Image (tube, rainbow, N blue to C red; front, side, top):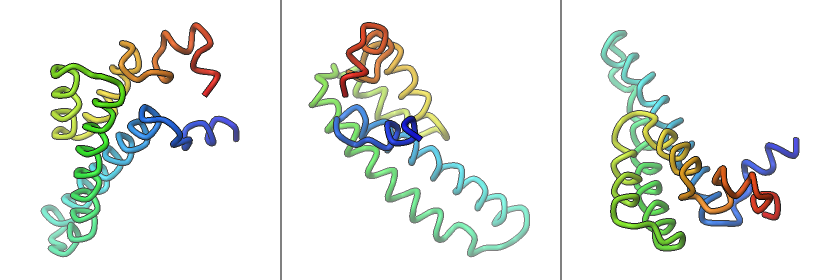
Length: 121
């Protein structure tokens, strides 16, 4: 249960970025499922709610990426990768994993965890 509490901790920019990245990916999944129902099964209305939710979460991801970029002092390249990652399905999660492994997500980064700094948050 402590792991779930840690995952949903929104106390830092990196932790907020992680949650929104996962929400963006989940909203993509919901939209892809809805698109199957629309295009394969013929339910035209299937994409209305998932499409609106994904649109809102997409905008939130863009905003949180920019806020995180400023807070964590990302350079233009890292910021651009974060923004571009919102376009392909599940790209936000792939970017989040990459950023954590390469030291771009502060206390969530692998280096921070191996030195014990990730445990303080």
